[in-house]
Amino acid sequence: MNIEINIATQQLIVWQQQQERARFTISSALKGVGEIQGSEQTPRGQHIIRAKIGANLPLNTVFKARRPTGEIYSAELAEKYPNRDWILSRIMWLSGCERGKNRLGQCDTMRRYIYIHGTPDTEPMGVPLSHGCIRMRNQDIAELFTLVPVFTPVLIVE
Image (cartoon, rainbow, N blue to C red):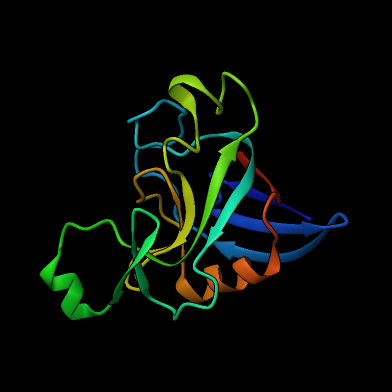
């Protein structure tokens, strides 16, 4: 099983034995692609899912620093914290596999805290708007989370 994320089409495809198993519309970085620390860009290349966080938690669980805050996302919470970058429901933390491109030094995907994660359902999909991560609808990230194991390869292409 492997995942391909296509930045140009804003699609995430799950492949199993060269057959498409699932397809989701995503939202990648507003600032485009790039690997440098602090760029707020989506890193390209070969990655793996290093960790999965949030199993069995309710949809719309709010995370901060990869920990559930005890909050459930709502319009009222969004109004109270209008500038928060919402990380909801599930987190799949990516780690780069290509030394000098997306691993180690100033281009380390894992140290940049790049995730595939849920976002408020009011946020548009199919349009780059994130701060570097791959955003998905909450129901979609929950489905993907159960579909793929830790260490699944993830290829991010332009």
